[in-house]
Image 1 (cartoon, one colour):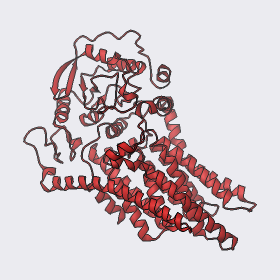
Image 2 (image 1 turned 90 degrees about the vertical axis):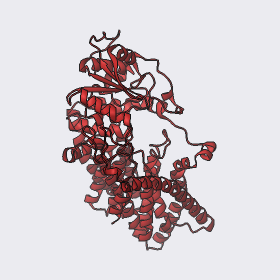
Image 3 (image 1 turned 90 degrees about the horizontal axis):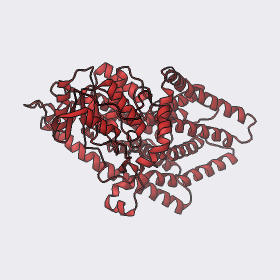
Image 4 (image 1 turned 60 degrees about the vertical axis):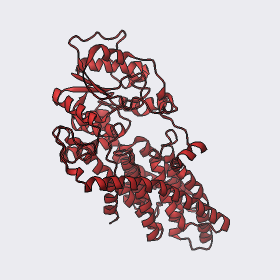
Length: 567
């Protein structure tokens, strides 16, 4: 019942505007995989292969569309809600578990710019692993549960390498400490720890090792190392960092305070953990140690550690979306605190106040967003806009589930008229086997780019570097490689979509700074000429005489390690 309710609620509160960058790269990456491409080797990707392959399988069954991807995202978020309920219900009253799940649902419904985000299936897998370890992760846990928990961490890694690795490391440490400190004086303590960690690690390896072997055979590991380790380590913080909101920004936009919620919950959890540990120590001294008390202490500690680990995801880019994992685990932690109230009155009141105020502030922000989009969607459905057919080739701005030929992938979702006109034009001027290139007016300075157009047009990219990141496509080595790819593929059309060429206002990081590299811009200007304009969107076609490659062109550059050296 909870799962069904969550599905309906999330569908009702859905933002029907498509995120052209973050969501677009997932939509198009899955389409590339469906066509036989391998992530990292054939296209640049920050994420694990899991989301691309799951969506590719769903495309195979139901057809490629935004609606299929949104249905999968809604399914995953609903699973998170149910898993939060399962974890809290093991150790707290049923009513508290239901409320915690509802609060989590309301928060997840407010994340209206993160559809298709691989963090959600990774979080669902991590929560499932925690549920397998309850009520007790010690030697009394069955091998099947320990292996399943490790396997869940492995599944998380397939969607987000960093999340899976962090979850694995955190839970290994928690399991080892639990075995060491919770069983003092037991001669078999070390063998117990070895058994638990071995079974957990085996479950992790069963999931991860075959995928690693497959990527190795496909020759994707060098590119993976560049995409996920080398490039982000050098450029991510420089080009994507955002500061934590200060007092003045909070006064202007109080909703930004949501990013502090995990910190507040972790601080509030400390007295709860200390209180639970003291009670357990007393029970053990009296010879009546409670398994429920031990499980509560272990779960509080595990959720606190996981929250702190997941905070690393948002420490560079301090936005609600990037804090989502830590916020969900914090909400779960808040639900369990009702069973670990400190005995000291002042500490108890302080902890209760922090939890209550933090949850209330989070809900206030989330409910406002949910209410807004639920109202828009109800109005859209009730005025029959959802099934209306436009008299022209381009449907209404509000979107329709009965789209004209060529726009079927966008059915039920809204995009701008100029984008739909550009999509139809490119589809009419090219065949399915043709490649295109979606660029920006300038490539020496990048914020994000419109990856959705590739998916909506159902056309392949002429370059593996179609997903733009500042510091990458703004560099000379990558621009030279892109020029070489364009010369080999000779795309008939290039589309210049300037909407997201820069953040307005510019972000306080290096994405607002020009690299001074204009090789790609110079090549496009010489090789292509304007042929059609749809407001700000300009379509270029290949000139009859293609210019020579720029001096120093590295035609043989293969990306991956070579790109690392060049950068």
